[in-house]
Length: 375
Image (cartoon, rainbow, N blue to C red; front, side, top):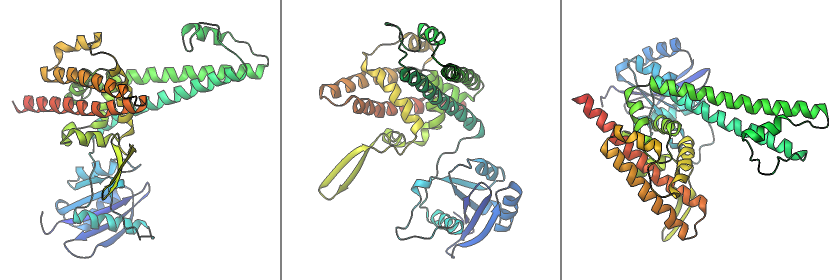
């Protein structure tokens, strides 16, 4: 790194950005607070020195990656920092935007900050679409809970043998007439809300299908390859591909497991060693879909119809990894079950190992695509 390199720390907010700069071994100095507007940022960086000599960092947060994309277009090296991994002093009791920017610049110069992987705008758009569907599913579940509990409060029970949310059940609900008109109005609104959420999910599913078809080749290849795993259909595969982003950025499977937050917490000192529940400090979207997929491995290994149709288009190594995952995780599930472990812990342990197989397939797919491009 050149001696002329200048390290810039930015404390970014919706309307303002506090900026500090560290030059060589000199003391870190504040450049003030500027509006969070592209033209103001360009003017500030022009005063800071040559753009090629600047290295800028800011913490990931609600402002997203718009600033990162703007700086990279200007030719400025920029890193987005993981906020939870920024070093802090235990005795520090004063916190201001200026101090935060100076701390970022100082830590950035010393190499103590951990950057996060930043997607391009297309990848981020697809990821937002997938997360919107996940939010819609959560809203649908809440709407169903409100409807079912409303019926329970008034002692409305479906006929014997009628399962909830089936066509027969809906026919019964839509034909209900409660005592007071206010109750019927409330019931209609609750039913309409469930219908609305179902239509919302259907629209988002269609949008995801179109987005994947128009996505870059690497994302399409990852989605197809990940569906070779049991319990991983299209929506789950898209979620895994968009949330992981680049599988090659992880060197080992254990790093992937840590990224999902499914490794056990630990507090050890000297001869004393204590492990607790999983950390849950990683990507919650990944953790949710992996746990859902892990339930499928309690069944004996076999290829379902979807997997059989995928086999001809899969690379031999990918198919081998997917089958090895079925055998390994099925044995793991029942080995823990025979030890009378709680089902929740068993599924979490299986999901943790499933993350390793997902990583193996992702790395193999990216390697094959790189080989094809090089040829």
